[in-house]
Length: 259
Length: 258
Image (cartoon, rainbow over all chains, first blue to last red; front, side, top):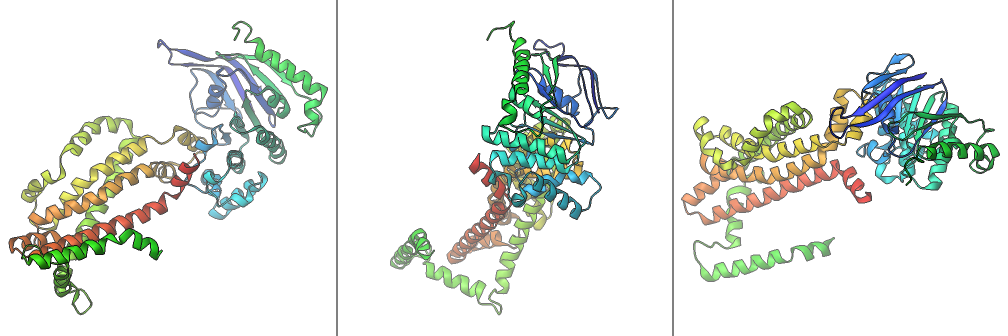
């Protein structure tokens, strides 16, 4: 579904503050997989996501979505950004925010409204359709952003540290929401996070990146008994073992430069 | 409601009463009493068959049409050009120096130029008002369009929002708080320029009324013109603020919670 081959990206090549963010990254994601990408802060995770989304053109390597080379944003791809307060449009009602991307689809006004309602229902926000984003809490705003992505019916959903700006309780709720909606919508999800526990709890598979320039240093399959639960899953021996393993991989990269 | 009105407006009748007493004591033709101004206004303007007299229509309508019409032209031109300049990098490279020069010219300085270029009458007023008020609208529109949050544009790009909608539903609303700041300035500026341009280059309108009243030393007429301008300015501003409040509800809400 998603093939990344030898991806390299250098910011400001040739300039004195040249920064090599990604170096020879190889990764392949299967249809329907929920892949979590973890790595130390500033390791180029966001650069990777923006390259997949076609928002930047990497300086080297290839990205294919459904076999097609990414040049601009693929039309079956949606993104949930970390900063919901900036990625939702504050002048539109919640329903309009969710429905706007559907203009691209071949849908009349009524179908767009229904799709928006349905998506809002699946994130538990049906009652907030006519509200404005500023009237909602942070966690609810991020739900709106998720609903917007769901209504778009992407085959690939990218999430860039989607729960990085909400409190711990909301974060757990949103993690479970992602697990729930992926059951209903058949899609591939790539979730970027710096939270090791989160990556193991949510993912079918966890890929660990090195610090910049990023390349893959670990690739683990997560075989935890489902359905996952915030309490029992997190005390399962396999969860504990995996999170330690991922933690070592993330840390391991830091050994050379003690903090 | 009534209590607040009384609290806010009590000074007005007090001042009017003082003025009235002073004018009666002085009995000078140069200081007409408010009651004389009011009766002048009633006789000349408000005693017609349908309240307004023919003279009132001659005095008010041309001015109103000019100020509202010219302001609208300036709004459309200023916003359209401003958004284009704000979004298109090469265009702004070319145009920025011109804009900087144009905004620096004091608007009334163009009046003599337009008096020569155009025949007396509405053309002169329209040119003066449009040229004068377009700058704050243009500059604020450029600023607003230039500073659309990149993440909002990236979101639009990711979700394939078509160019027309990107302009109408994302760039314009995002720039609207800035645009409205420019519009607010332009409303009062438009009224000022209307009067100035009518004083010199017109044969009707409120400015013309002022200049003829001044030539004839018709003090009540002069004051009546001033009163009408004050009321007009107040009404235009209130209308504008009402519109702004409606359009920018989201902005005030978002700022309160931010």
